Image 1 (cartoon, rainbow, N blue to C red):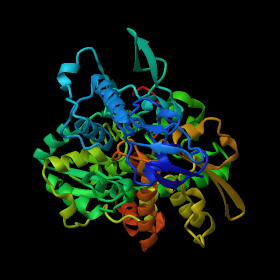
Image 2: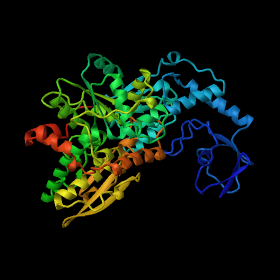
Image 3: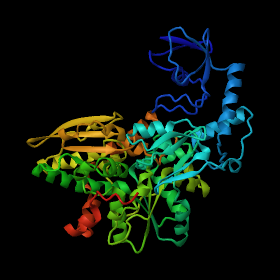
Image 4: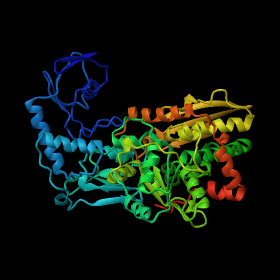
Length: 546
């Protein structure tokens, strides 16, 4: 099909909307509430265009027709956009100079373009409460523009914690009192106005940094996303620069959680082999995603026995750090808002001590680096510290959907057969498809596996026919986590994931059980079953921590 936009002809496909065709061809149309993960909400009504012979329409929801002629700028369109912008800002948007969130800054830029004076935040605060969801998420209703993206995403996640209710003649976003938040943070990454954000731990971390002995550890996905906070291309790998930046902030040591992902793989592999041999509590589900674990505990308790007992990688590494260092403060940099909740869980304490003291999201560490006027792009690269330094490629790919599964199967295959997989690139478990399936022949047994990419895909899923299932709450896995830089869409997720797989491809050691530093950790620290259980395993099912 062909349509004309501003008198230029463009190719398009049946079913596409005008906005997507325009943006693909470099034609800018303001579209604040539109997110490619969601169906059009038609809320902000800033993406107005004019169709010849028909009138004014929203480009986000109007599908193309062959021969259609579209105008994106006219006096009438500009007038209507200005009116709609004024209505949006009348609904309590805060002007925030520190904010680096592209959607919000885009809204403020639009206001400037249309000469709209922004009402100061404090003048609009009265009557619009702030809600906190556990230790992870804050919703400031004074910044809400009623676009309903958060509600649509929460429903897509299969939770439905957020909903619309009418109050005093107005519709507003509220929490459903009969449901529990799972803290995935997808409301944050899909909010165009900054009404949702993580509960910040920046001040606490700044205070402990003054005292010294602070050790940072960062998740596998961080290396391919933190650069976006400083204008670097999507998927840029900045591991060495991040280490340097953290040292400049005052870190005593910096470790890579990818290292302990190798330990998670080994322990999870052992447990899978045992369950397969006994044919008991199958399938085994992964448990390194705390939003998934919480979802199981709250909404699907019948699945608790299927969760692996292995702790998530940053909790394991936090335990090892606490064992090997003298009274350290451990700070995890995570792509995830739910990790803030995870570190409060009593089940994960070791002899009454928290393995991890604080969690910062990717966005939070970005703010700290900017606040300290560190020119991230110009930093020299530094090496990770030891003994918890070099991970394998199997540890790095934990950041992408399917990565935990692929890492585990590489090790399980060798442990069960005594042979290496001929091709350790298990491409069937990669990608952004909602549900991925694979079957791998291990010795005499065909092991059936599945990957759930995005929490909502577990609904209606027939899990009983599989042996091993990975579930990640956030679309794309950790690379699309609720604590990651904004904006986020599938193209960005692909670039972040590709970067991780490229690292894996170039690594000399690509299987967790072959990591010599992991072998050393088992000899020196994890040298008996009791300690291994204490550091690496737990029991889920306690839902007291809300």
